[in-house]
Length: 347
Image 1 (cartoon, rainbow, N blue to C red):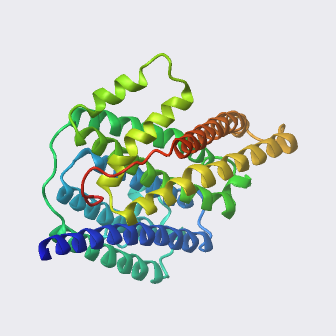
Image 2: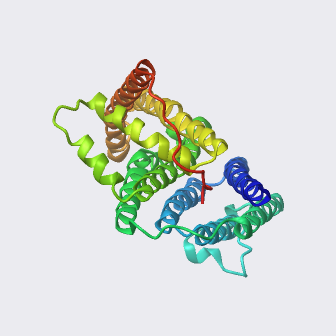
């Protein structure tokens, strides 16, 4: 009984720690952003912050290539070290005496007179590293070593998805400095999109692999069920929820499930629609007011953003309708979905 309680306590600590690390990372990103924004950097140097943020999100997804929980924690620690070094090198020029001019960065426009960035970056790093190290010794090292080929394909697909969903934000970085996309409002949306997008993509990959590894025949059963010609698009989500939910309940603690639900709702059904609507409004207005005066690149990006925003909004609305239909159907049929096994930790 004590061993079981002790294990649950360890898992709870690890799950809460991972959530705290996510929140502190987001807080750090926002603090660095506002600090650099107040420093009046030129547009080239200001874009570097978003390059770092996008690189962190991409590497974070690659972490899912391994199923070993301790190795994943080590990779997370390496990511935190790389993030610290990036901020100090790019915005302070103080990392091991490296001359930042080699990277084409104007050292005179950096925040060299401020020690706040260094202090804050180290505080966040020490706190997050401490939680990761404690979790490393508490976590159960046992893991399943199956479905690595599907996992690899999943990582590639989710990297592609992460890049596609943030492609507009990347293009916007190179617009004219007077573009509304360089204002604080949209840059905050971009920061959230880079950060939350990586978290949601990584979590969805974990859920898929836990689903496939739970039972050798689960993927075959799921494939057979979803390939029936009589199924409609609504039936696809209905079966997906019925088959998927028990695996999610058995693979994650309740606190992690609620956290992931919050992340998905905020990112997919709040942040993305707001961003897409903003893109549609901004781009349409810029084309109306400055069509002749803006460059060809800006004009092309505005047109592309209007088309892509419209398509993605339609897709999100359709998915939301299908999910709501499936949930209502499950409720009407009074289907009870129970977890299969005791939950394990996020890592």
